[in-house]
Length: 124
Image (cartoon, rainbow, N blue to C red):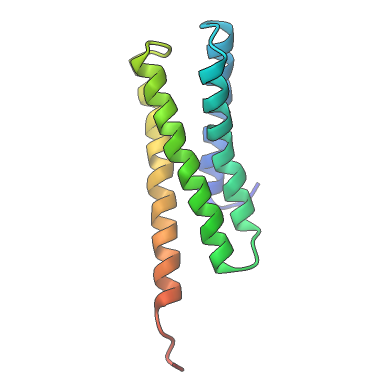
């Protein structure tokens, strides 16, 4: 695993999502929504890892943008699970705050990366 903070946080988040998935399947007997949140929640870290291995800044931002979309989708599924009483408010609060933190980090990295590329160099 990378030393990157976003890589570590997205990996930890994926582990939380896997635990949630197991709970939803075993205790709630919920399969469709469980699979949706599993796919989007684990995809965040996979896209972050891909971004860290890219060759260009544009590809880096593109992969992080996909990770951000997956994080936003995961937030949707989590809200849906809470509002349909599939998970408790306390369980939701815990995992959703981690998701929101990832969203903020990803947005910040994308914005910073864009602004660094747009700045003219002294040689220009």
